[in-house]
Image (cartoon, rainbow, N blue to C red; front, top):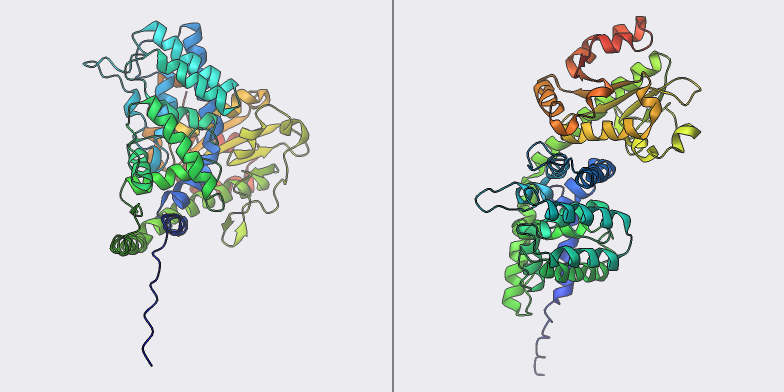
Length: 437
């Protein structure tokens, strides 16, 4: 009886391989999905960055923005973006003034500066993709030298489901994944890429969020070389080669596990400081609120939100700045009242920029916080000079009137038990803090 011919196995489709890539990427502790997209600080930064962009737009409109990037409100908000993990690192390069090239031409040219301000204002006020695209076309028609699609990194924080983030690695990743030839400096190319990104997100909607930061992170990891893109043809040898490269990327991800574990230690330390402030606040007789996104985080096996307020008091929850208030790391409230006695932002390893901006956002959103409340940036002892240097920046001139204090870990650890036993009110906690004014 003749032997039957072997059945030829069809090579997997490009779509199948992309799906496999996304699944592995989502499971990789060191890739942007887990290390940045699911990072709590990413969500906390949205409101403060939006407020910062509104300040830029307002200063441009009133003519007080100035003629330099350094020390401006734009530098402050771009640094808040750039100091997020991985994907936005280097976001400020496009906005730095390059005197020999005279770009980007929004500092020395008042008309261009006002056009940039209008773009920020118009995009903040609209809520549809068609309107955003129209405003992008409007700024593109002006041919402002050096003002290109890097601005999308600002617009992403205004409309994360409509505008993807943008940088060299993301473009390289998109081109590798789709076979496109997107160019970096062209708004027209950016808009074409945006359409393709939306189609990609829809195609893999069971794996990718409608927040375009997720697909942006995937493209960033492909473009920066962490993951190889599947070949666009169905040649079996190419497929096998890609499978081998993907397996290598997985092995490298496992080797990077120690770095991810070290980051986990940083997060646990942040939770430990929150637990100190929680316990101290309760010992002093305050009602305690733990940031809404941290309530379930464990420290010593106990949720941080245990025995704390489950919801903000009614008048606080109804304020315009309620979203910011809910995300402050620790709040002490007068028992049975809506008054915030103290607010604490723990800055273990995150950007000092972001912490100051969030505190300003909180204070300006809620009048009660300026009426004698204690406002504290809590950070490692070694970060005091960093805190002070950022606090002295001209862009934070509005913060100096808020009487924010720097509370070092060392002082808190040394005195917290004595304060809990013998203290009352905020006198002792202010005594171990250092004023930043």
